[in-house]
Image (cartoon, rainbow, N blue to C red; front, top):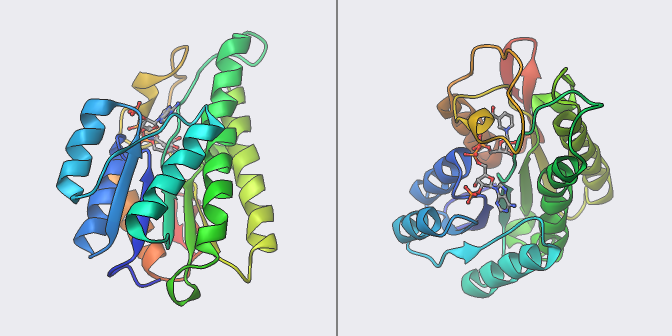
Amino acid sequence: MRTEGARVLVAGATGVLGRALAEGLHELGARVVAAGRNPERLGEVAAGLGTTGRHLDVVDAGSCAAAVHGAVEELGGLDLLVVATGAAGFGRAVELDEAVAEELFAVNTLGPIALVRAAAPYLAEARDGEGTAAVLSAVLADLPTAGMADYSAAKAALATWLQVLRREQRRSFRVLDVRPPHLDTGLDTRALAGEPPRLPAPMPHEQVVRAILEAIGGEATEVAMDGKELVVR
Ligand SMILES: NC(=O)c1ccc[n+]([C@@H]2O[C@H](COP(=O)([O-])OP(=O)(O)OC[C@H]3O[C@@H](n4cnc5c(N)ncnc54)[C@H](OP(=O)(O)O)[C@@H]3O)[C@@H](O)[C@H]2O)c1
């Protein structure tokens, strides 16, 4: 898609990847509205983008819809939705606290789905028929990992939903599923519960941000791992 002048909502713009994507898209000439939960970081990011920050709590479907509708009102439509919200949680499958399990699925699966659902009618009407939903799932969707059963399952559920969405909406808008490996953003240090198992050396997040921006600017439907390589396809 053409990013110059594109009307964009970045959900999770208070996070490391979300902020870098919001700022990268802004530099490419897009009009970017930031949505996020942490008010201080949201204010800071929004000020840099020259737009209003939209409060977002993805465990609340009403908040997801309000963030989308607020952005549409401000921008006069929506060409690109980026969903970069997410939270990790660690613990053996049989031991994870039920409340943590529910939050993992709310934040990583149901919230992103609610955002895309709210945005779908606007993406279908996007400029030049180039509407795009770019959503962060994770490599765990393909490679579920011990000590992360619920986080892996929540991301796999999201990735499956995105596959179906892509088929159903192939004539309406593009669905880009981003499934990066372990990154250096510190997400594992902000987990909802538990200690991470031993993880591979993290990939620099700048590499993933570059790949996502390349994918958005083209026609790709996936940023994913092919062996040890991050590929845009
Ligand atoms: N880092 C990795 O190793 C890795 C690997 C694969 C996939 N990913 C995925 O990449 C995405 C971005 O992660 P990141 O690495 O950039 O981590 P991050 O900096 O911790 O960003 C996570 C974002 O999710 C937001 N969030 C969490 N719970 C929320 C809620 N209930 N409502 C609204 N926002 C909420 C956070 O908002 P606040 O800060 O405002 O609370 C933050 O903006 C996530 O989907 C993550 O699962 C990351």
